Image (tube, rainbow, N blue to C red):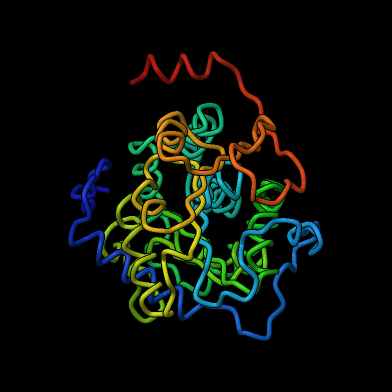
Length: 317
């Protein structure tokens, strides 16, 4: 998508576009927050309250604390945008050659277990071109169906238990993701979470224009979104927790008083160990490096694949 050529895949410091993306995500998240009287934990298989109460953290009744969860490979196996793409292809939103690209990106992500900025950028650009001209309400309705078809069975039970512990303590829980905010909001609602911070695609009159507000909610932009939401909601970030698998989210993790590395990539694992952050890896069943987080409700497994696929990717780069 040539019009989005300015979206470079490896942004480092927070830029004006990062701030704009973060503020837009925070505003969208507050608009879509679940009503106070809606009960959390509506998804089947939510961990029992007694399990969460075994841990001294999170602190029960601390209404100035909240938890922020990355989505891809932290809460859910794989990348939400790729699952969403598969669902749109099934509904004939685009052609087979575009599905092949989505499928390859997903296969690489699940084999490598890390985000590739170039892959993620390509997928976002493709998604924007696909939804251009469609109504937001249409994509929201389809997103509900796609969640059931491709995402519901890919939620990590262990991470779900961590989120439930915060909910049971009376705290708000937000997803923070580069996925479209509409998709993220659907996932948050289906898991009984408070809401979601996600990439905001521009719409006029309820119709997508094919452009973003700011940039994808990735890296520094996630930290800006969390900072903006915390200010608007009266949260104390030193009392908040954040969870992620990726070193790209170090800015967000460093912003809170309780950072957790979940299914961490090599760079995040090294960074977390150097700073004595808590770790948990649900891919292998490794024990937590720190005491004080609830036991996993179950251990997930990344879908298989072959080493040949990784080798093929490396030859193509």
